Image 1 (spheres, one colour):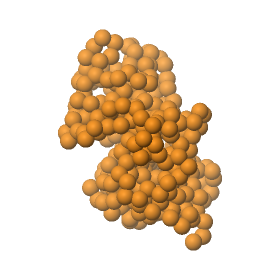
Image 2 (image 1 turned 180 degrees about the vertical axis):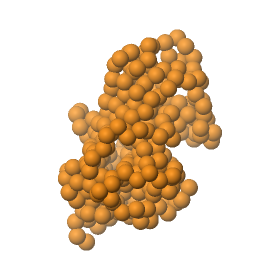
Image 3 (image 1 turned 45 degrees about the horizontal axis):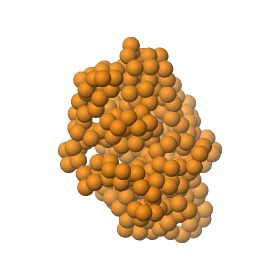
Length: 319
């Protein structure tokens, strides 16, 4: 894992040919542009690999020939975050999915992070991707996963949709794993604003323990607070009704990166494994270990669909 992601993009934006078929860990790179914004989407994991405003990075950039560090930009379905022990029960049946983080004994981030999505349609400012979540041991359900990235002069809109194309009800949750950055400034000096009143405490293996008031855990970022050396890797809830906004602002105030969503949960991670130059902000439909607890799990009946939409934009002013 490269802890120093300050690097140029692998290729310039190509307006005449927005897709380039390169044999790289991200699959096909799809390049989008609109107004002052440019973006790169990788088909593997339907991942956001880059978003810039006036050339300034608003999310942690992932090069075309790079294996994304710490799930950067990946789409997280059919569950976000973790399943403790990789085991859960649904509709009276016990299931076991592979544990892929043995230090914590958890199954992280669903099943599609390293699946190559097909490009369904694309234009200069929009790309639609799709892939099947095929039945398998531990998740014997069949879903169609669709992810759309739409860039405009107001920023980037991302929609993660799923349809149950199988014959049985399926448990489901969704998220995305963007890392907000202020032009790769160290986050210790940045101001983080998270409008959430409650936080899910965890043990030393990041297993959920209990909900607590953010002020009781020294994890209160409402109204903005300099991150400093704080290490954060927690799920938040108790967000305002309707759409909420998380922002990261550079020390001098010249760069702001923002994510907006209406999901009931979000994970915030201080980016320690990516050199603390970006903060992961993951809008989630359910909390960690939801398949075990049942909290806010979406039950997709055959033929039913679900959508999660969020936006990322920013501000860049002269220094």
